[in-house]
Structure formats: C-alpha cells, structure tokens
Amino acid sequence: DAGITQSPRHKVTETGTPVTLRCHQTENHRYMYWYRQDPGHGLRLIHYSYGVKDTDKGEVSDGYSVSRSKTEDFLLTLESATSSQTSVYFCAISEEGLYGYTFGSGTRLTVV
Amino acid sequence: GENVEQHPSTLSVQEGDSAVIKCTYSDSASNYFPWYKQELGKGPQLIIDIRSNVGEKKDQRIAVTLNKTAKHFSLHITETQPEDSAVYFCAAATSGTYKYIFGTGTRLKVLA
Image (cartoon, helix red, strand yellow):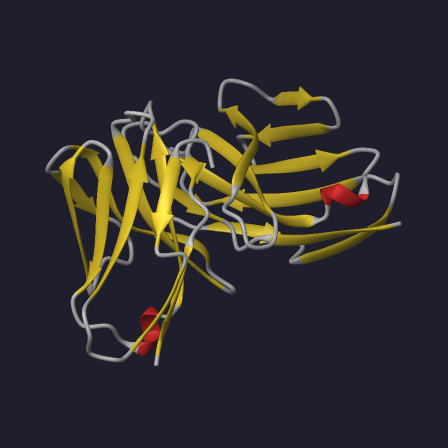
C-alpha cells in the first residue's frame, strides 16, 4: 500500500506479555496514526503523531503507548496484552493532517 | 460524544443496479467527510471525499452528497459491478483535529 508497511502481519501472543507493532513509511509524511478495527465499532483511533517525538492520545488509548523517533517509523506498544486487545490494527499516514489518509494492510493480533 | 451512524449494515444489489449508503454525524463542527472501501484482508482505501463547502461530488460511477443542515451524507454507486463488493466506511472529521470518527461499515454485495 503506497509506501506504508506494517509488521508483523499476524501475531499471536499470551496475556500479560508486551507486544510492539511497527509502522514504516517511505512517503516522508508528517502525520501517522494507529487505529484498531473491531466488528460493530468500525475503526477507532488509538494514538497519533504529528511529528518526530510529537504524539497524542486518541479515543481508545488506555493500555497502549507509542513512540516516534524517526519520521518513517511509528511504533505501537501494548505493555501487557489483554484479550480485549485482540483486534486488527491499522496504521495510516497523511501529508496534510486531516486530509487523505493512506492506510497500511493491517496487523491481526490475537491475545490468548 | 462525537458519533457517526451508518446504514445499512449490509446491502445486496443486483449487478447494474444502484447502491446508496447513508451516514449521520453528530458534531456540527465536522467539515470533512471521506469514504473508504475495504476489501477482504486489506486496509481501507479512500474512494471519494467531500468538504463542507460542497453539496455534491462525483467521480465516474461514485458520488457523495452532503446535507449540512440535517447532518447527513450519502454514498451513491451507480451501475454496480461485482468488484464493487466490499465493506464501505464513512467518516467525519473536523479541521484543527487530526482524527476521523468512522461509521461502523456497510457490507455491499453485488450479485451477478
């Protein structure tokens, strides 16, 4: 998907373990976002970044942290995974902030 | 809180017929309304968007209409084809923020 890569694509982890998901972009876009997708809820914003080391919380940020030390990478960390965090996680990037998100292909995370 | 309602949740149409998906938003400050198409196993892809200073926008077989007074907007797909089968999401956003509020999605099936 147009210069945005998520890794891993699939992961199964145990409750209580830390997990880090990576989003990598080659578009040099300023804005990056992490969403989760769950049936019946659409996509919900977890955290977003508006520049290197500049991040803020979204509507479902509890239990998640993020870091952005380089323009191209945005990491999402689940400090201690719970079953309620089983979901599909999407990263998105945009050049102009609000307009024209481009989404990655997603990471399917299962917490057992 | 901010909310976007999307209907219907599933929609089946015969190939060649039209499909209409409707969304209602709650935040009167919302001024940007994108529509995304998500195919199985992929990330959402932007198909069309509209800003609040425009009432209608068309792109080939796809059109979006916006009624700011009623706070609703709709996606219209004409001459549907099997490849239009996917899940469609609407979203609402506000200038000065960075987040989208997504609807819960509509699964469109185009029957050949």
